[in-house]
Length: 259
Image (cartoon, rainbow, N blue to C red; front, side):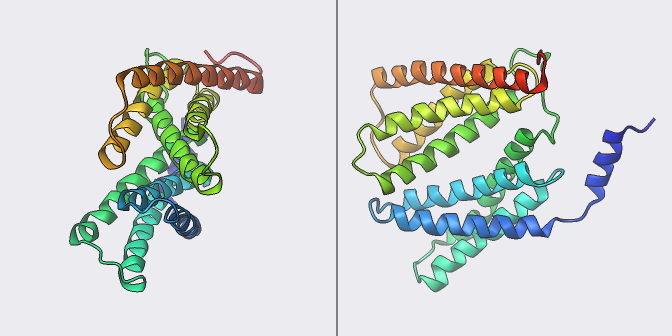
């Protein structure tokens, strides 16, 4: 017997491309790239920062399309990311007349395609379109992935935004990352099916490794061991607290238990 879910899934598969969401994604991503690149270039003149802004914008476009569009929209996220990358490279090369290396021309669109698909997957998971929950297992690894992507995107954008708006704010990065860990745990606890308390805690370690690796590779020397250990401990506690809050609100929303 064919269920309503089967009919809906078949309908989604047969549906054509949602070009309106592609256009929205390209426009939103273009505005974000323009605004943040202009703000970042005022205080940080490093190609790595510009590359990170473009990468985060493509990733966020995928998350927005996957999370807000009806049904599954992985194709739309991929096309929007690809178009955004091509438009950005072409604008830099031909309008701004900044030399673009051949390697960027060759690998940039493919890199953007991968990022957009990653973002689309995260958005679909948050929307609940993809049924990736494995509540019978100890760790639901898809939600660990979602946690890392959400946390990295939120914290990175927040660093650039606060630095541009309030550069003299004391200990800004400390508060930003603390909030990012808390919000990451909350989002995953609230949106994921079943109990996913341990996933945000594991993802906290992943976020620290990703941030630490990127900062060490492109910006600053590696952090001291004691600071790294403190970050692991604090990030884990905050992610667990956010996860607990998200799970609690999820239970109240559905009016029962989630396990």
